[in-house]
Length: 462
Image 1 (tube, one colour):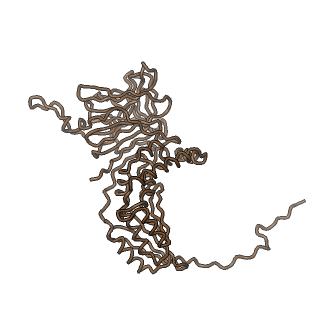
Image 2: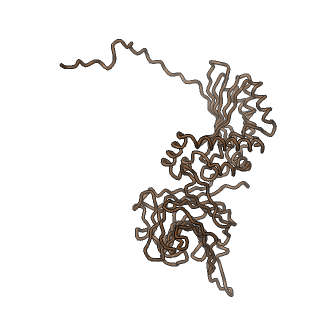
């Protein structure tokens, strides 16, 4: 017996009514002379207004160095200004019947506020004070740091948080978005000065957007905003430091990367064997003037950092791979993974060459069968190295310093130029680089896989 088809929509359902045009509230846009963008939207339903002062910088801006810094900065921000204590701020909000909160996400920080329109001038003045002259009291900072630690310990007992953290790591890998929260050790290492530095660098009018909606006349509100925020320091933010990040997804080497004497060809360099990795076949030592497996990025600033992720399984002490701060074959510092016969396992070794003098300043056993993260940081005068099993993983491990602070001035044109009896024996003219390198002095050409090469200039306060 055939089944009778039924209409998809029952005839009992009433017909749709006529469409109504969507009427958006009146919007006004203006950019103040100091760079602050303002967007106003009128809505005259109730005599209130709501606003957000956004800053286009959040936790991702410092995720690789100080995870969670934007969030703790936002939380301590509202506790005091140079003209009001925490108690005075709360009393002012109660008097106005207003709400005010601060928060930070991955890509932005915000001061959120709402209140009666009749108190708009007073509330906007308070917001302007927080944006321009937050005090960051030491006791409030310490209290917030303790609360952050307690919250972090509680989060790490929650399956949903751990699952989210793992998912982000899988999705974003070495990108700052992979860092969901700091470790306990990182929170314990927070310093008040870091909050102040982040605030000065990112809470600027040219980096901000003020959005307000509510019961007001746009012309009058804009005039009030110009009066209150127009004197905010309009100095341009410092230029964005240069950053380079290569995840080796392309079959061609990025043109900003350099090789030493050899063209980038499959005889020693492979971008196809393992997708998302740079494979270097081990060749001669960093002191060799002939065949080296080395890929470098030029150092462009005195203050800079470089890092990589290395997957390398040496079986002999003459098999090495790692991250080098390199000037030429006679001047370098090299943090490398190798094999230690005495310990019978992989180790990280930090070696330096100063013309004919080679020294080793650290040897640290590391876990087997896992990629190792390496980092080098220089301030012009010194360079320091660090390593980690995984600083952005589901159970993040803090960066572990290795070896002493080393002399970076050796890697300079001035130091590299040598003369004997007014005859120049060594020329200095190349400039320093950070380099990924692999060596195999056994001639087995053992390969090393690099998952990432990141180079960043570091902005310093004048």
